[in-house]
Image (cartoon, rainbow, N blue to C red; front, side, top):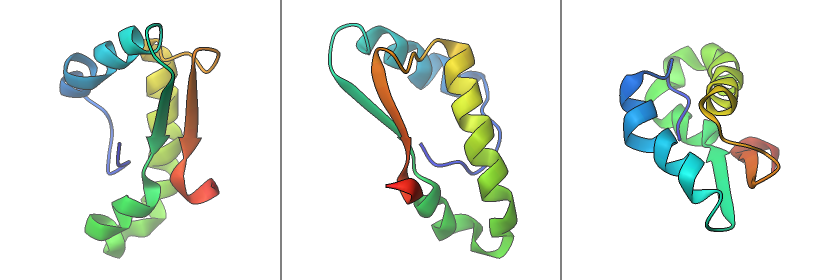
Length: 77
């Protein structure tokens, strides 16, 4: 998921609910594609780091569990 802004209900119902279920059924790798965010927000790149942290926090709040799935940030690998 690209960290281009705050997550919204569409993310919860369209993606995160599925991820929470899938992490119990398969080996899952979820990553924040912060380098991909530069393709649309290159003129406001100073916000990407904060959006990256906010994205991970929202994932955890929605139920994505780092004990059941691998969570990572693209630029840190």
